[in-house]
Image (cartoon, rainbow, N blue to C red; front, side):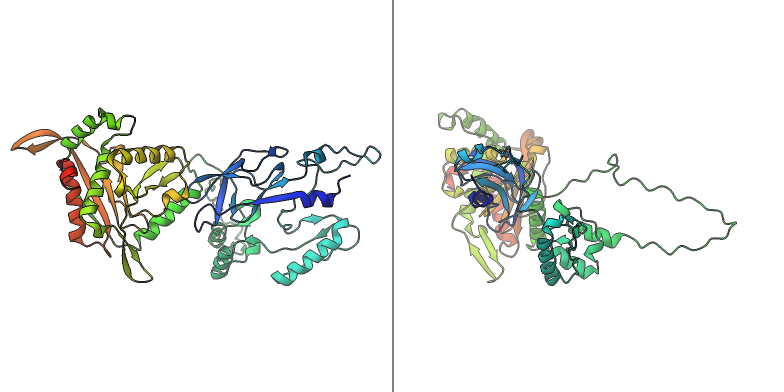
Length: 465
């Protein structure tokens, strides 16, 4: 007969891995298995979203799912166990109960065994009397570590363990700085965790004034009723997490770290649009994504080759400019999970068909939400195509660590002076933002002017390359 000790010894916990450099947490988007399912080594069990991308996680064990530690939608710290797998031979699962005693052994995915990873009891939580000795030890340790008094279980009744409120270190520091007692804060995070918003909300709550006796003849005027806090007809709150949260933090950091300069140029791209149509009929480009973005990307790569100093980054610690002898071309992509900027590695070395193939793969992968963290790291310059939304141009913010970003406006027919006459021509406006610490006005202007010149006369792709 299998003992509980043997069962526990056979359980393997799979922890949330660090699926990207420096990531500290990930949200569980979807479980592909349930308790009781049989899994094999390498099988994908869930999809998680990090601050950079959605990633599928394979399990490294053979066995049966015993427990899913967190529900879908929960943000979990890297290193926290998320699933438990019983790796015993499957025959142990068929062990019958004892009809004489009526006891049913705890099998994989069944029974009422308490999770080994439950958080410590909340304040006021009851512990059965048979666990009084354990509760007493837990309470004593918590009292010593946390500086709080703990109730000692006595007699045969229920015992109460006093534990300090759950909050991460940055939130505790915030509460200390603001003079907020966490014991008085109502938590809103998962599993009763206090968030930064909870602390700020506690500060914002006004203290009720002491009641004073009003004269009997005083007329009482009723204050307007405050709107219900759960009324969502007028406002909707959207939690910012995952990719959107990381993007927001990165853009704030970039905007207030790198001194941005943006320059604009309006250019006649009629010849480029004609070349796009010709390339669509070229046998060498069959089955590839051929559009204006492809030729604009190639134009930018040629401009960088002619002005290599723009392809650089700023080393704040060393106070140095780091020139890059390769171009990882970022393409800003709007996805259901937010803005991401994957990049084409070594784009400078690709032929036009190879660049078209890479662009096609990048876009389709981003739309499917399958962009890997590695695909979004190491970018040097970026293109953002705001023209697809009918926008003329904009002042783009640099992705952190990059030197320049080119915004493409919408391409549309406009009156244009061509060969001394006003004619309808395909016109667009380009905007180049760059880091003024490492790119001065002359260099930035040369790069933008070269891109415009190529798009106006695309034969320069040959003569300048």
